[in-house]
Amino acid sequence: MTLINENYLNLQGSYLFAEVARRTAAYKAAHAGQEVISLGIGDVSRPLAPAVVEALKKASQEMGRAETFRGYGPYEGYDFLRKAIAEHDYRARGVEIAEDEIFVSDGAKSDTACFQELFSQDAVVAVQDPVYPVYVDSNVMAGRSGAFSGGKFSRLVYLPCTEENHFAPVPPKEHADLVYLCSPNNPTGAAMTKEQLQAWVDWARQHEAVILYDSAYEAFIRDEKLPRSIFEIPGAKNCAVEFRSFSKTAGFTGTRCAYCVVPKELKVWDKEGKEHSLNGLWMRRQSTKFNGVSYIVQRGAEAVFSPEGQKQIREVIDGYLANAQVILRALRGAGFTVYGGENSPYVWLKTPHGMSSWDFFDLMLHKLQIVGTPGSGFGRCGEGFFRLTAFNTPQLTQQAARRIAQFTF
Image 1 (cartoon, rainbow, N blue to C red):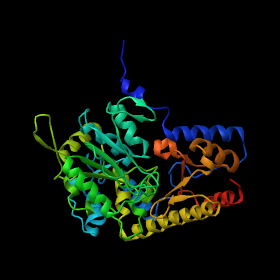
Image 2 (image 1 turned 30 degrees about the horizontal axis):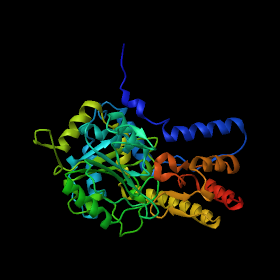
Image 3 (image 1 turned 45 degrees about the vertical axis):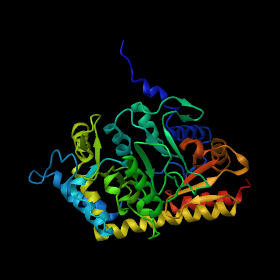
Image 4 (image 1 turned 120 degrees about the horizontal axis):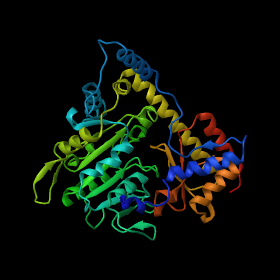
């Protein structure tokens, strides 16, 4: 008899976005010919920037010639991309990150899900609520969650993100070993200030905790007073790992490229109190379980940092932020209370008349043919809220806005 990892049985229902897709597909099958507009799953609609496409073409041609063909690449990523990341994403903002602290991967989702493997099964995990489901589910799979009851897992520390605290989590009074933070936040769209992040860094150093900081949407920040990286905060290199992605920044959702930064100053301990480098442990994990991102894709990612690439992707991001403003105006005009959308591609709205998040999902789908994401799928504090994304085309976003404006909720 072959036994399973029973931690998987603690996972609650189907993965949130899989359930959204299932309900949407069922509606489309029953209503052929109706145009359904997706403002739900955060996939992009704009094509890759021309500078990226040209780099992909050139790299593909290199792979077709014996003298420039490449086989397996470095587990941690090619030097040319790690150098570009260090220079443009960090040193340009006054943050010194070394190339060997950068690890290229196939997605921030993969990295945030897998990084927990480096820590003890007894580690206490803190998560924002509402939260991107991968942070929770990956720790459930690892056996750190405890039993599920009353809408939460018994061993997780929940950090409420509510209207009262402007959706910004505050450090808990109790101890935690790992803390997942996301800013700008998915799903609420809230971006943390330097003062808020400093409080977290101070707390983490006091508790000898590690912050797993997801900044996949940092390129959407337009307020110069807001930090784009946790490493802009003094002391963060001693307690934080940062995850970033080219998916939303440069449209790589179907191309797959991301990276994480693991500072060499960041130390962890074994049960005997011996110190270890988290940077070295992550490299050991990646070299065992990951064979690296393709050369072609990494050349495409490198082109993001070229002058042409920077100009082109900024225009794309500005377009998505303009979509967010279209959604915000329509919702406010319809009387909704809304948040986010300013330094983020996500709009977080309060459901009307006390409707549950899934009831509002069904209303939007069946009455307006618009797909969003129920807030309750992100956690208990997400109940009564709903997420819309700005990643569709301008035309379909404006059409969705018209449907909202014309409907009586």
